[in-house]
Length: 319
Image (cartoon, rainbow, N blue to C red; front, top):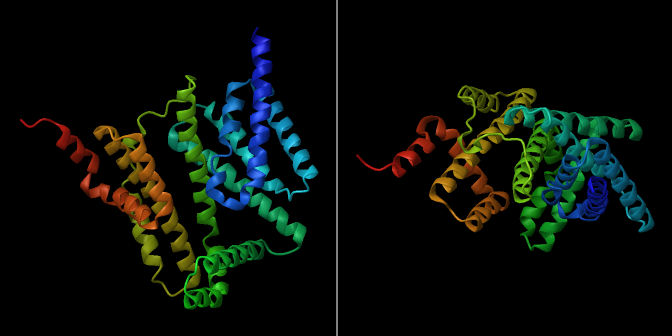
């Protein structure tokens, strides 16, 4: 009976993961937000099955998806498919170590970033160009694609002309902040899959590593000095120092964003806000940049205001 259940789980896992890889390959043009949760099915089935069975299902699904894409004569982005599979497997193995939430995210994100860096170095070696030139070329392609999108959206020609003229500066800027963007992307990918995984496992009635009450999470208080130093570096008339400052600023803002999200989650929990409203709010954070700035500011000013204490005081009966 156990073997039959295991076989059914492996067959279902093979089917789901094959579809996941195909979706990731065929829908990659939609944008990175669609692919952030692509490792979630890998995490689910490699956790549900034994280690050997899980690895076997992932490998079989990967090969099957590759074969289907080859038959369809589709361009196969092997590094992207590999990262989807690798991220799910990585999270499964790290979760078995029962680390804290911070250590789990840092460990997984660091491995992901180093893996992506290795891909870039390998690709630059194959193409016989410097790694930063490879990143610059990719940034230039993204800028050109956005320009084409702006034209379809009837953005004023003057604005499109300005962006076109500033393309070299924009691409250089993205090369400079690549370390922070790469690390931030890795952290956000791990964070999103951990939270989605916890929700999925709860729905399925399966155990998941308990990270405690994440609505009370706070960034270290001394981090504010890193933020202040990063801001100060932007006013130093040396390009190298400005680039370091920008990278530090992006990383510290990301950390304060997590604190802001913890505060909003705490508020939603205390006020018993409906899931529909929560979904709308989190969707606005992705879509509207000013909402993201608001969440970051919420996390930063919590150092002095302590919003969660004020929410508790409001909810506590007087007297």
